[in-house]
Image (cartoon, rainbow over all chains, first blue to last red; front, side, top):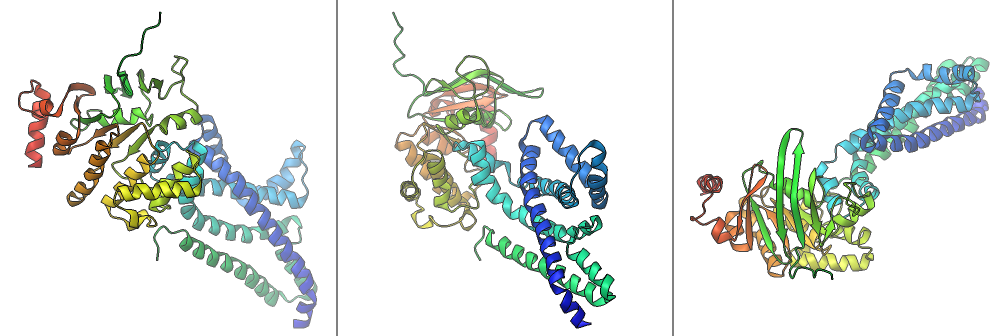
Length: 216
Length: 264
C-alpha cells in the first residue's frame, strides 16, 4: 500500500503545485480587485458605490459551485470561452473579491473619522491619507478575516477538480481510482490541506501581533 | 489709480458665512476678521455653531454662502469667483496653511510622537527625514516632551497626547492655529499643562482662533472674545468687556451666569 502511494507521490506533488498556483492567483487577483473596489465602495461617488454594492451582494449570494459552473458552462453562451483553468480562477477570484470588498469596508470603517480629519488638517491629499494614515491602521483589522479568507481560498480551490483540472484533490481521486486506497489517500490529502492552512493561521497571528500599536 | 491695500489687512477674513445642516441653520451670516498675532477666543453655548465655524476655516466643513479668506485667498472654493470647490490637491495645500488641534487629540496611533509630527513635514512640506526629525524634536522640546519622542500615543497621558497634537500642528508653521475645545476631553489636573503650551505660543505671536470653555484662560490669553449664539456672532470685544458685568447682552449674561453656576 505504502509503496503504491510512494509511487504516486510525484503525481500528487504536481497536483499540489496546481492547488498552490490556483490559490495564489486567486488570492493576489482578488486582493487587488477587492481593495480597489472596496475603496470605491467607501469613498466613491454614489453610482460607483451602488455598482460595487450590487456586485458584492450578488456574488456573495451565489454558491461558489454555481459560480464556477456558470463561468465555465454559462459564459460560452454569450461568446466567452475560457479554458477550464482560467474559468475556475475567474470564478474563484470573483467570489473572493466580493469578500475582500467587505473586509476592506469593515476595516476602513472602523477607523474613527477624526483620523481622516487630522490627516486633512495637516494638508495630506486623499491618496496620502489612505497610504499613511488609514491603511496602516485598517491593515490590522483587515488581516485576520483576510487570512481566514486565504485559507478558504486554498480549501475552495479543491472545487476546480470538478472542471477536470488536476489539482491536489483531482490527483488524489485519480490515484484512488488506480489503487483503491481511498482512506490513506484522503487522509494524506486532508493532512496536506491542514498543514498549509495551519501555517497560514500561525503566520496571521504573528502578523497581528507585529501590527499592534501597543508594545508588549 | 489703484487703491492702496488697507494698512492692517486681516489674515483671516470670514465674511457673511452661512451654513445649514438640512433645515437647521448652524451659521447665520457670520463675519469675523483676525489680524496677524491675534488670539481670538470663541465662546457660546453648545450648538451655537462655534466648532462648525472653526471647521469651516480649514474646510473640514463646507459652507453654503459667504467667503472665508486666509491672506486674501478663498479657502475652499476656486479663485474664479464661482462656488466651484477646489481640487483635492489645492484643498490639501490650503489646509496646510492652517493648523488644527482637536478635542479628541486624533493622534495617529500607529506612529510615535515624533512620527506624528514628521508625517506632514515629510509628505506635505517635503522635508528630508533628518530635517523632519530635527523639527519634531525641537517642537517636542517646546511642549516639554523631548523624552517622549519615540513613545506611541497609547503610552502617553491625555495631556501629553494633546501637547503632541499641538506640536504636530505648529511644526507645519501654519499661518493660523485653530484650537477646537482642546482641553474638554482632559482630566482637570491635565488641563493646565496644555494651556501653558498655548499661552507660550500666544506669547510668540502665533495667530490663533480657539473655541474653549476655559473662561479664566480666555480672559487671560485672548486679545478678543467672540460670543456666538444661535449660529451668529452675538457679541464681540476685548475680554474685560465681554466677561465683565457691564455688558448689555441678555444672552451673554445668562450664558455666563449659567456657566459660573456650573463651574464654581
